[in-house]
Image (cartoon, rainbow, N blue to C red; front, side, top):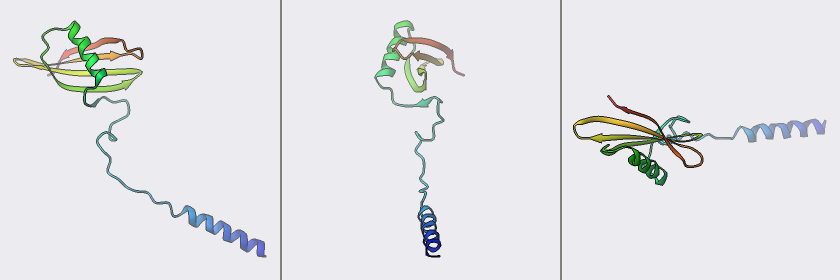
Length: 111
């Protein structure tokens, strides 16, 4: 009989200990709300600067970078939006592979 009471007490204590877990409900930051694998706006770092230098070495007269986004894939997609007075904005996407090589994968006028 004493063993049963001890067993019931131990099981009860285990259930009580597990039941005291609390969950904190916090507001997510904008970076945490990003969908995994989706392009996101960020400050341009040295990798972005290298991708921009690659674009400028092949393209001329693009204007200023008005928006920069990045997407992590098997490598990195760098999305640059260029603005120039008197022309519609243009977006150029540069893919950076895992070895650091750059390729322009798309280029087009934004409407």
